[in-house]
Image 1 (spheres, each protein chain N blue to C red):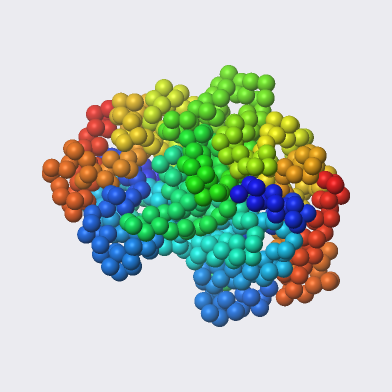
Image 2: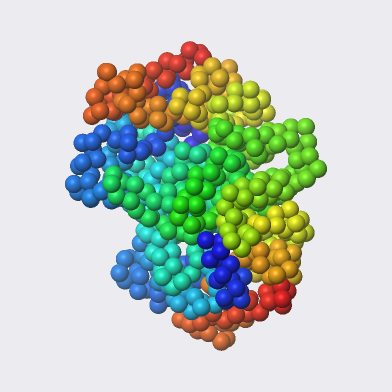
Length: 308
Length: 308
């Protein structure tokens, strides 16, 4: 799957992943009213509004980006209806040819990780029947429990051509509290980076990158540079661009000289573009999909200036 | 909520939490056949069989234990139907007077953690309506992202009298790979323990314990002892007893001298008791609930010998 992702990045000339992390406040009234008419002002109504909102964005950006990254928390908060909306969003994005990175950041012991792995990137078995439930192409994971908590995902990645991005250095303000601790001459995130890079040898693709990638926050440019050197065959998923304060030149260090090696996420900056001063005059609320398209084009231009 | 948990531990004289982590292989044929007749051999059929299985266990153990801990992964793997079964299980356990610890081990940046927090232990808002979606009393969390990834849960714990257990030292074989790293004269798990203990000051209950607890694996007795000393006001959730190899004397160090300070989880050893040599002769498959009851009584006796 890492080969497919790279191929799509090259085809679109765009190392961008659009974070599908909807909030009701982003969604045009007409979409919400339609959903509430059918389902009431309920968790189901909210979840269905999310789905419609997502499909309209996906329709406008599918030819411009390689991948989308739905954040499961935004859906999970609405219970079963939310999970249904999350799964429908994934299937819709895949139908439109996009690679889907499920931002789930799960972490658990092996016997439990197997259940997450089978559900998200493998198959669940009910007697003689098998089901593909979530269908993400990649998922994100948390490394705190160590290798045996990751191994069950590696098995399914091999079997079903999937991949993962493991948290190494996150983009939030307090990420250093644990991740920057000195563990004998290097920071914990560097040690975790080396571990992840080592695990990645088990899942090398044909383009010199592993299907085990790393999450490396764009808000820490010098750290991205260190990790790029320590983890040459690891693809980086870089959150924090745009709304979280990361700018293109800060994340140039996450890329190799050939322009590969990283994919940059933007969520609010793309999916809520229609509410931003930059696009508000040009697009109505109901043209939110077209505003997202323009924001993707502008982000691509911004990135291309830096990574060439 | 930590006060309620302690009160129930005292009332039942039993610091045990029963892990509701069902697998189809544990479930009596008659329950499965009924579910498949209604829903087919589908994810819905499996999820409904889980729920029936859980209710029969809960009916038998509700007077003997203070709490249950459903592991969301076992349900989440079945998609929306699984999440519905997870939520129904929580509501059923709460109706029967049990404290519910949702084993979700989530970790994310603050804006995302808010969504998890609102859904699991707070309220989600859809226009002028508010919904309590998951209704767990406690949830488990992963600390790798630092304090700002935990803060959104603290707000809801205050508002709705809830609590959390944060991973400090886990019970799996490779937990030391990251958690045991030396961070300047102490292991990472000790540093994390101190951080968690400090965060806990924001949520102190009336019995001298915080609503911010810690997950401390029973498979590492000497580490439990160290953490007990470092974290006097922190309640420990101790996994690993029974099937994972932890024995009662190993986890005595997790308790204070008054018998408080820890709650010990057993999952397979209780909910699949009817399949174990020790109980198989005495209970038929269809008496799985009664077998679970007996296993709870035996575990209580085992723990009482050690913690007095």
